[in-house]
Length: 466
Image 1: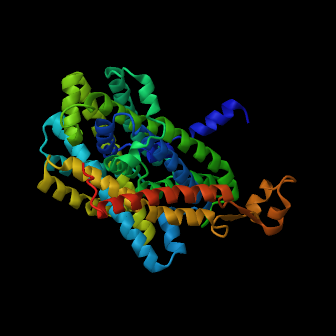
Image 2: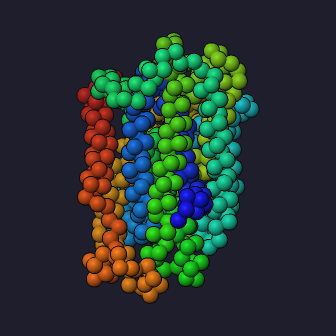
């Protein structure tokens, strides 16, 4: 295939990776990254970089799981795990969605308060209805890709607006020592020397590698798989055809990796850099929150800088809220096999997540919102090992990840180059290689180990607070 042909085909896959990247650049990231930049300047940029590396590893596993099995992570849990274990994982997944929605809703409400003077509770109420109206147009259960692509274009527009806002912010700030900034992407001992740095780093990890994004990542690849099989064979089987998997898998990998590095890594780094250049060394930097960075940007740079930051928070909050509601539907339908109409499922899952947001907004107001937001990101980090363990298990299991090569519709895929072992067994094994399995387990162990370190620090009375 020519370069033009490759690029033309790749263009048809643009969308899912951008949707997944939204989960890595929501207002929860703003809160933790602002705290990190305000207190430790550029030293925690490494936490953002390594978190995005972890995200790429885990999300590639999600893409593989959804593409090869034709089922998302929640559906695979229901099919392959014991019922009691499923209930536990479902509970933690739902808790993660509530914690995620807390950041999305409160962040959007704060942006609305800054931009339009909305009271906090009114802003929270607004986020319920706009997200539900938007999601009415997302119908991946239909065979046509038109509405799916329309939804992807809508989310891409919000993401592009967020990126443009932070490009403008970076042009407005001053970074005298560029070398110090780039050194921030290298490992730093401050994470282990300062308990507060560890706490914020875990918050960055929780805000970056979000549990709900694993369910989302394994689901958004399915429409293109289904479209291929439906067009070629006129029907959909329980598992995608080998031809569909070969057609989509590598392009889905490429689109995901490019989206995460060009969008999520950039936005997260920009948030911390903007906070570090404006808040570091200022009075009350430890108590920096979303409202205070808006005020300080307006004061130290210009009112336009503060306005751009608020707009970025609004755009990212809206896109992340949509994606979080979508993930809630995936989790509920996957684990519980709900058969309600899609809009009913979305309404129920949205309400499950939105009720705690009302309580936070009503009882904490503006004071304490930053602490609640950062705590929600640490909760996500603590839940991540629970939901990522089944993902690693499924993608490492040869039985689950094998695809039949004996169906008559796939005979034309075979050639003299097909391995003899594959011809003999009639199966192609897409399970993780030994090195990928080891890498995945190492990522899981690092996340779990850091979480244990944090819990032990709390138990022994370490003074970690936001």
